[in-house]
Image (cartoon, rainbow, N blue to C red; front, side, top):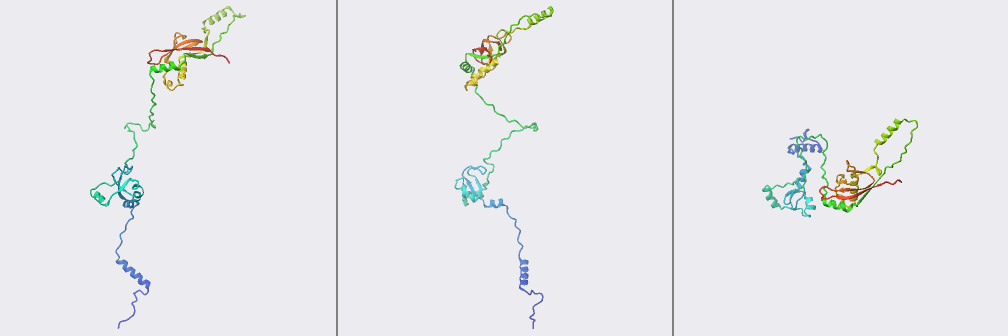
Length: 279
């Protein structure tokens, strides 16, 4: 008769039975292969759908291109705005079979910066480059039109004021105790000094002064202000010294000629130099 006693090696409680059972099942269970998590970009690429552009979209492509796009963006923005359209599944299958490219063009519609060509022998350590500034182009007036504007805006007489040289009468006085030789030397020195004219002035009135006054008169009109006039275009006809025709050095009335380069005949104006009144 067989004994009814339990072997001593068998588990005696319910927890031990469950543990032994789990070990046996795990030993026969096949090992699971380790799978790495996909990146966010890869997961988004799997969710994208292929759409057809209905118009040119910068950084995506031209109208008619097939590009992948996020379904939410297509549903909420692009399809209601008629920027893109859905591609039917059957047509998409045919296009994939034909090997049609379905990629966005991130450089489409992007203006590349214009770079200056650099020569090989350029010195890069010479300092920062100076940008070219285009000069303002002003339409020049013809010589005939310039002379007409000068004749219109410059009066017949141009007035100047200068400080006159005062002449004092010197009395001949005898020097007590002085010799006759000293009187002779003094008389010779007085005779050698040049005498100023009776209407002499301090300084002078030059052609530069006349040209500046004329340009000030022309500045009150927009067209006349464009007249190009320099001191070389003005010369004294009367009153100047023989060796210097660019200035007068006395009070009085004198004639000047104004002639811009290219003009046929000069204009004549009167320059009047008056004494400056003391305040």
